[in-house]
Amino acid sequence: AFRSLEWSWTAAAFAGLATGLVFLWMLWLGFKAMHDLTGDGNVHATDAVGREGMVTVTIPASGTGRVRLVIGPRQREFRATAHGVEIPSRQMVQVTAARDDGTLEVARSPAHHDG
Figure 1 (spheres, helix red, strand yellow):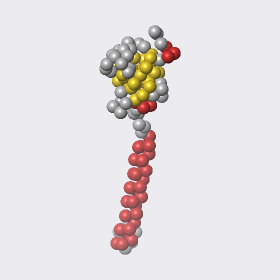
Figure 2 (cartoon, rainbow, N blue to C red; figure 1 turned 90 degrees about the horizontal axis):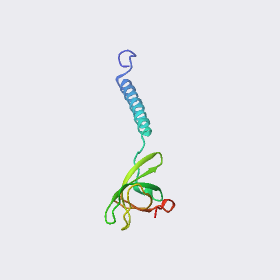
Figure 3 (cartoon, rainbow, N blue to C red; figure 1 turned 90 degrees about the vertical axis):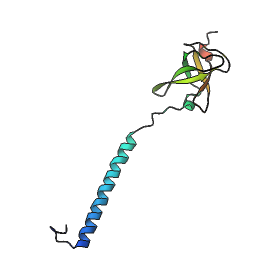
Figure 4 (spheres, one colour; figure 1 turned 135 degrees about the vertical axis):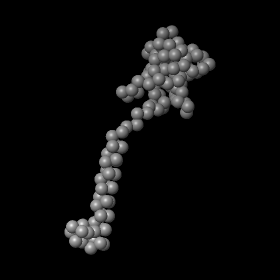
């Protein structure tokens, strides 16, 4: 602008500054659009409360096992405990609570109780 349009140095500097700001704004819009496309794929233990799942690793009476359940479109496994009752693998359970460490508290599912 300074040489080819024969603008004053001040006018050319302001034009350059304005052009730079416009391009920074466009770059910010592009990054914001990319960020908006991402999703939080995390599933929190509290999302499992009230759901049914299947024991994949036996839950001992005084320890933790593993339980698999579907939350939304995702299948997840969590550590699980059963209030002092042993629950063997392949048993259906219902999640009764979630602890702060991500462990689920479960009970045998009333609909699938095998005795």
